[in-house]
Length: 450
Image (cartoon, rainbow, N blue to C red; front, side, top):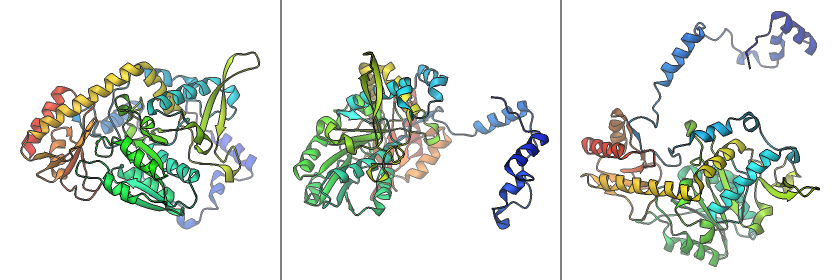
């Protein structure tokens, strides 16, 4: 679409149509003290050639994950996205689709959502999945609210594993800040997993739900089945979450390990890092809980002629139903991100996703073994991990990361603000995007800066 500025004559005509002498009158409701007293001090306009040159120069100042090597994880993971994903999602009929307000007409959008739901339900080991949430953190918070609705109102305690990503925990606390309930954080043990003994002591008649992440914030794989058995035995609901969706290609689905609700971040499936978003919350649960599930649910049916069709069978936002019956109003449309995920998973297939997960696993373990041979690097946790892991350094991690950055390496995330006792801890991630040469360079660079 071309940019066509309005002429003075057009501006005058539009002003007359709305009953003002000039566009400035439209802003008279804004107090004078809040208005600009002079035009913004902007630089002079540039030609298109100079503007493009200037923007490219600004872009070169960015630190990107495509440099000498990025080993960042912690909820945002660098994965390869096949060109076909962007090619398909950039088609006009997909890119302009916002939300199926007249669902019976939006058969293409509904079918894409239906396929997405089917894939997520299969990967999580649950009966069904919704059409998507904002992101993994809000999906976890919605799962807690859902569990509170499904349990005895007298149960006011929410158990939150301290090994859940700190951002996710903060979002849950924000969601529940005006809810009549109590949050109890369950610590992790020396192996990086939830302290099962403390969890069992915390379970009582007042506990409504317990939330566990696997792989957790430190990359450690939790024993979800054992934890689920203890939680369910105490009459509470179990919520499992994840931030690295690629792990679903290798680990036993949490739905098959006793979780009642499984949520997580789906950005690793075909969505770019994008400076932090938009991302995609995944939400799956059991069939018997469907009427308390937030968001939309697309179903399959046949029309009057017996042809296959798709319908919006459940929509629980207050825009569609009475406010007091709405389960959530923060399940807005993430259909384009969900479409990218659907295309991505279709291209990989079950075997491809499993192979990708194994590559991530092997890369992370290769890098960890190399780092542990360096004096001044120790393994943080004894528990098994997927594609990221924590190590303890002999120096301040922030100082080490700064020196690594000077070598063009994004060396990980300092964990001192994530949990007590981790002042010297560093979270390192390796995916299929990290070559053997990059990992070897990282080990050499770490040896030099320690």
